[in-house]
Amino acid sequence: MKTKRRVLAVMCAAVLVMGLSACGGSGSETQADTTAAGSQEETTTASGTVAAEYTLNISVDASEEETIYKYAAKFGEELEFLSGGKLKAVVYGNGTLGGDSEALQSCADGSLAFVLSTTAPQVSIMPELAMFDLPNLFDDISQFRSLFDNEAFYQKLTDIYQQGGFQLLGIADSGFRVMSSNVKVEALSNMTGIKIRTMQNSNHIAIWQAYGANPTPMSFSEVYIGLQQGTIDAQENPIEVLVSSKFYEQQKHVILTNHLTHACVLLMSGAVYTDLPAEYQEMVVQAAETATQYTRDLSDTQTAEQLAFLEKQGTEVIPLSDEIRGQLREAAQSVYQMIGEQIGQELMDLMLEAAGK
Image (cartoon, rainbow, N blue to C red; front, side, top):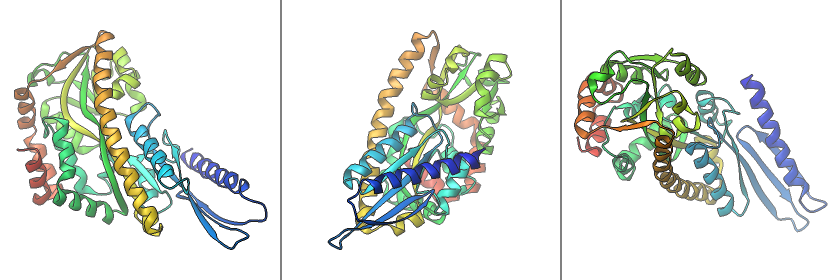
């Protein structure tokens, strides 16, 4: 089914390119090479000048309501604006070009121009990115964002992505991941035995085991029913997902564990980036900077609005003190050791330094 959807998406991109060609002046000759990465057109006019136009595809496995999709849309808008329409971006949401893992692989091998995803599925390709799985590391989201102002850290991160076949363009976020539960949690001891849905990520599973919970990997599409039927007591996600997926209909409490940041990473195929003319590369970088800041601001505004919405639905929002989050971090020291073995001491030191730990 994914393969069929991907073929359909590529055909749609090809139709878009042909539509653009039809709008050109009469007598022009057009050559187009269309792939999932997008297409390049060369139009020779009567005066002999050649205008190059690229249509580049952006994959994101999220709905239009989610921050990461809005990140992709804003980036696409900025790219078209800066290039005067010479660079056209087409956003494919809801995993149309494949889920995160499939889209990441397509981007790495050059058959897809851009992909936006969280770091969790990227760990299987670039193990060093497990550094973003360190639990309860950051006290507030500004600490996390300041990581990317550290030149040494950002260069190291850029190198990791380049070795994986990507050009890193920006990292925004949709705030922290939090816990929703039908069991009231106000202390570490309340976590004991709670059946909580997690992603199929060994580090995430280890975190909840360290807290004393009973982590249960489950497909996201099954979470609502799992909560409804009592197969699971709890789940963890960014606040916006609790709202967009209506988990609040089945959950009594939202606990602001803030155990992990939910990073949104904008990546470009290294091969596609290299093939672009230098002036277009600069536009890509500039568009990404604007879209990244826009997304961070949007996330902050939406988080406050969504918490207020949850409370209006009768969901109890439970903040945790710095002391309790510190206890969560201490309980997960075995996870720190496990991740340290995956990422190496240099990256571990950079992460701890950024968080003031």
